[in-house]
Length: 231
Ligand SMILES: NC(=O)c1ccc[n+]([C@@H]2O[C@H](COP(=O)([O-])OP(=O)(O)OC[C@H]3O[C@@H](n4cnc5c(N)ncnc54)[C@H](OP(=O)(O)O)[C@@H]3O)[C@@H](O)[C@H]2O)c1
Image 1: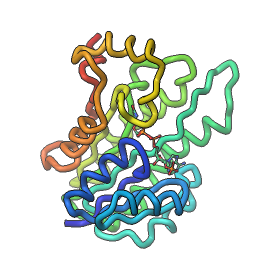
Image 2: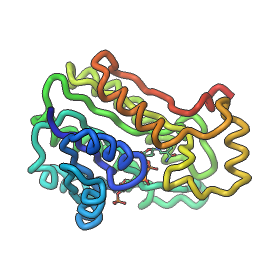
Image 3: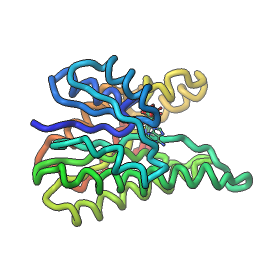
């Protein structure tokens, strides 16, 4: 079995997935923006995990940073820099970073690692349900998540037989980003979620592993939201 590469694996959902593969004895690479933070995360995850630092918003640096990564079984693209960016106060630089990292940076990671992938390797891209449930300031996030949906379709065709899927989480209640949210916001989200609670990191991780590992699953954009999109 080859390496599991998790871009954006130093924290949050990517790190939860890295931990589960490391606990299974797999070779794991976790990446973030900073080499020392990536090294620290890799050491905390343990097993055969190593860290790499590069900035997805600087796509010309990506291939060099990934040059030592070999024999990739699963490639996961989970990194995000959140951008609350309202059109009336539009911040061009923040928008450029997010659009570049999620669409060009993710694609360049795939380009750089493709020679290290086999026919039965798989790719998983993280979008999110801001794609379908926008809020004031979500324009860049909403549009790049829509881009992720389209990216899956074109990559499935171009990279066949390598499988490519995306996971679109609702709010993951115990993720670092949301675990301290205001109680009234939490209640409003739970009231609208048919399972009566928010999805957990562990549940999201299980869905991610299904998409990566089931050899029949290809071209899927999977909502993981406890039924939130039905209400
Ligand atoms: N959490 C949720 O409830 C939720 C809901 C819907 C969708 N999602 C999606 O799920 C994915 C993971 O979300 P999360 O909440 O787990 O994220 P997170 O906790 O904020 O972690 C973000 C990760 O991305 C890395 N990163 C950030 N900017 C980067 C850059 N420019 N270049 C390279 N790496 C970068 C960070 O590494 P360093 O900090 O070490 O640099 C970190 O590992 C994202 O794509 C997000 O949109 C999450």
